[in-house]
Amino acid sequence: MATLHYDMAALEAMERQFLLLSGEVIGAVRHVSDGERDLLRIESLSNEAVKTSAIEGEMLDRLSIQSSLRRQLGLDADNRDVKS
Image (cartoon, rainbow, N blue to C red; front, top):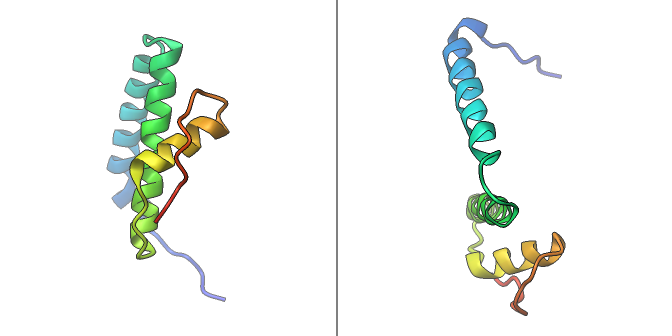
């Protein structure tokens, strides 16, 4: 089995930037309404789903994914099915 080796010094700047930006996001999310927070969550999850499916060579319909996510999260959704 291969062992993972990495250079921590090379990752430190990126880790600092990640922590700074994630703190900004957390702070910003505290100032939006529940409905806006739901929209941000749906948008973020659907973007990741589209990107992940593209890596696998499949193209999914963003609106269908968002509709499915809304149903899964118990939010109002239309009746669209997720399709490729």
